[in-house]
Image (tube, rainbow, N blue to C red; front, side, top):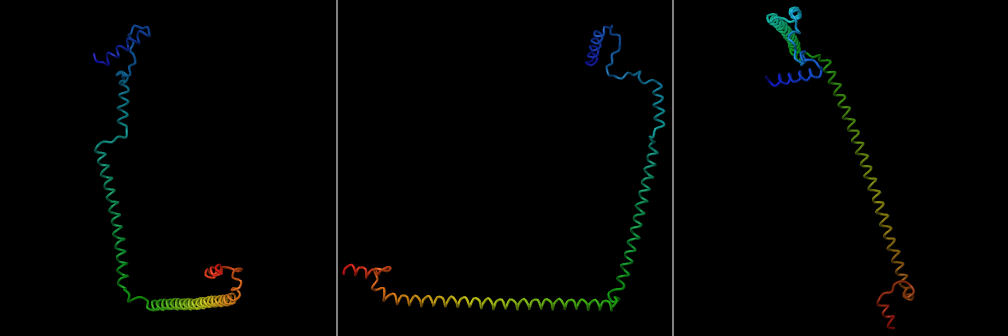
Length: 199
């Protein structure tokens, strides 16, 4: 006896002792009973398989061939349409190239060129005016700046010369009066200080 069968026999014996029966009953062990599928069930199953939607191998191959043909036809149709479209584009391009530049409407072309030239001249004249006005204003600003600088330098120079003159006057007038009042006002030269100490 294998391990599973011995274990099942032990389980049956346990169940029988708990139920109080002699152990003749079949215990549900989870295994499928062969008697479950009766001959009627088998007949119904076979009938169901025959009426199901499964197809034979030959039918499957035939369907695959039909699908491949349809796909090829679609691709061929698409390729044909692309060829026709390409041919149409090439014909249009060839007709445009055949005309060339020589066949352009000369009046319209000359008119467009004249208008472009006018616009170009206008732009250039505006640019020149703007540039000349900017240079004139820059020149005026430079002149003003220089004149202001000269004026400031002149006033500084005049101020300095006035200060020097006033210092000279004050020093000459104070030197005569300060000789008597040396001790009373301000600093005294060192030599005069020592002279006064000795005397």
